[in-house]
Length: 391
Length: 178
Image 1 (cartoon, chains in turn cyan, green):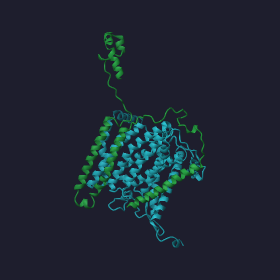
Image 2: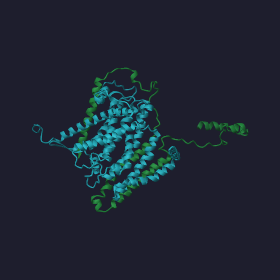
Image 3: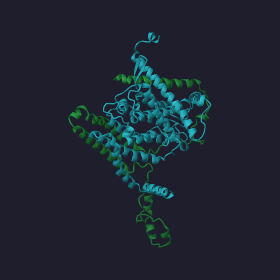
């Protein structure tokens, strides 16, 4: 029956549109589910029940939230720059959503007779640069939104957010760079496949184990890039009311919200691709596409949970600590890691020794750092000695 | 190859349709009141004084400059990373390790120069968010300035009095300059 109605092969354009709609819909749904997960996980960690009225287990809560946003009155504060005020939420949300276009979710999708190609919007040969460019663009929306509101809280939140995102983007990119050195490609799919055991020349080890330093740096930097706890200075409630979106309401606020959660999801997908082998299923090279997809989603979901978990576990940093960590610890660390990885790659050594070399190269740096900050070093020593005496 | 970007464009247009549809639906459905209180800028119930567009201490000015330099550096390092890898495979490998080591050293020199820049900014103290303005160390009063009466001078000798009288005019000048 179906074979008679449908053409033997779908036109290319139709495939593109189907993929775009499906992946965009999944992204928006995932963002909605993440908002629900955020509230549920918060509730569990605080020994509460969390939203449980709308739908079974509160599963329809994101829809109810969306409807509420639509019916909310919209306010543009007096004296705001109206054009920028309206543009800013879109400028924030768009780059975060666009990033998902290059994420490889699975290999070739075959449904019945139809081969829809690889499961991603596109496989650019320079997708790493594409992602880097778009994450950099996210800053514009936040700083425009904060500035155009003509509110002091918004302005301060925007200033903090931009300085913070700028500082941590370097570390993020350098962590990616060391992965690129290992994989020898700027294509996210190639990077993911280079970690699979079926890859030619690949040794089937996830980059998480080959590049532990880059992995940790990437995770810390992605928290700062998405303005999440413990680095959420852009919207730090006790200090800045709502930060850069203090004056926003209704659908525009929802867009900021959506952008934030999309950014979180994108970051989780990126860390999965770069460090956890993407859609690679361990010990099963020729897994069908839906198993690969499930593997990818499971890995990314673990990181989304990490985001929510950290929020209720770690206290907020102080702003000068944040900037100090970014520039004085993480950036030199990332540079050292890139250097060591470059040496390992060009001498043709086994990538497995990269972590050992990176740690070895770090030791003099750590000693220098401890010496240059005698106050902090002695503080650490004091805390350690106290612990020792207590036990 | 450009079809890759066309698919991105299709994806972006789906996103745009979604965003604008939401905004338009919301603008039709939501209540429109002209309540002036709601339009005031939120400052925890206080009346807003002045605009937010004031001269603001953009502390991260130097940080932003360093960021731009490093971002450009990283943009150059990405092709370097690819070349380094390719020099080991295929034709590069056939020609021996020569280009690999050369590219490696070149990359190291490049990173080292920028690392020096970072070290310079670091030592200068521009990476410290909390700036400590070190005032010049306290100078004991010279003949040009009026002595600030300290406990010692108030208790002790009165030999400075004659100087004080002579230096009144210069003190005024120094105050103006300050």
